[in-house]
Length: 208
Image (cartoon, rainbow, N blue to C red; front, side, top):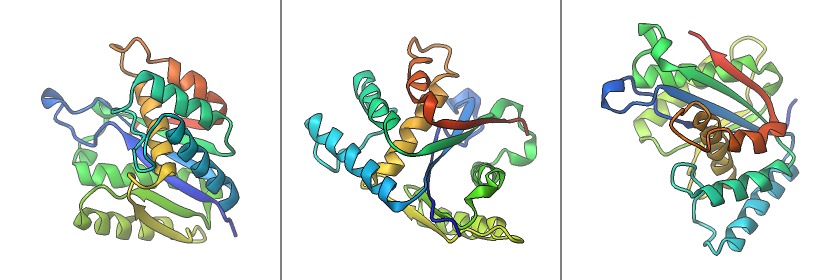
């Protein structure tokens, strides 16, 4: 039975109102640790970086809120840690209409990413819990049902507060780095993925 820990976060938004500011691309990332020791070491390393930056321990790494220098610092630390990352990139402008509701789309894409990675059977899965309680309950019920079909089982699924979880923050930073690559207006769009490339096992482009 796997003892892996999987931390999931996203970048972009699950909306489809492109004329009102919805992102054209949506990225979901799984950051996978093979054991608790590697995960704990990573969390401590990120906490130390916060201290080096003069931050309090509850200051959050968040791609869209951090400076260029802060993003680079975190990714350089992450590159030395023992984990692997897998991601799905969705061009929402090309999806079929059946997925174009925020709730259904978000749950479906996470399910597809986890189901694609059959070697995560038995893993403990952690997701950013910043969404409302009703949504979290619906998503948890859906994912447990879909991911525990047949012989494929996850050992647990929890929503955690990104403000207090360094490994969810790591997932956010990697997701943000990948999505930035698709923003043609940004001069730094290739830099972040270049740093984190050795940690990326798979970047899947979901075509609907």
